[in-house]
Amino acid sequence: MPHSEPLIETVVANTAAIYVSLQELNMPVWLRLDLTMAQFRALVVVSRYSGITVGELGGQLSIGQSTASILADHLVCRGLVARVEDPADRRRALLSLTPAGETLLGELRHGNGQILKEWLAELTDIDLEGLARGLGALAHSARPPAPGAETAIKEAIT
Image (cartoon, rainbow, N blue to C red; front, top):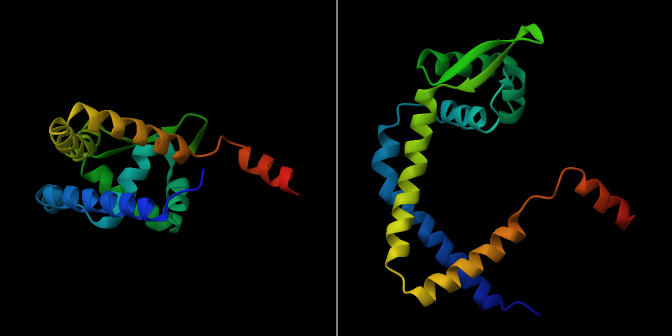
């Protein structure tokens, strides 16, 4: 079935409007956040890849290992990240969130979730069912390919 370009544009515009509203409502929380953007990005990476090494952190952020180490040190000093010795290699340190780091990121995420729940509660059951069905389909399309699937797809094409 061909897609309706105007309908796609409407969905994109409405999604952008929702993001802008969420950002505006969360602005006070973000402004109280006493982290540099680099520190925040590092915190998010450590959250996503618990047990990451400093070198891997640098790779994820596209920065050098020494810069990643300085970022990690700042987060450790603030009590947001723990640096522990790698049991497999004592020369390496592994990074993970502390309870304080988990709490901070949880509060930032919770704000968006709470606001969305309030907005969704205002919808009719019919609109909510349609939105749930549409977002479910979009979530299915947005799933990243399984590991190795990209190679299999390339091999199938060539």
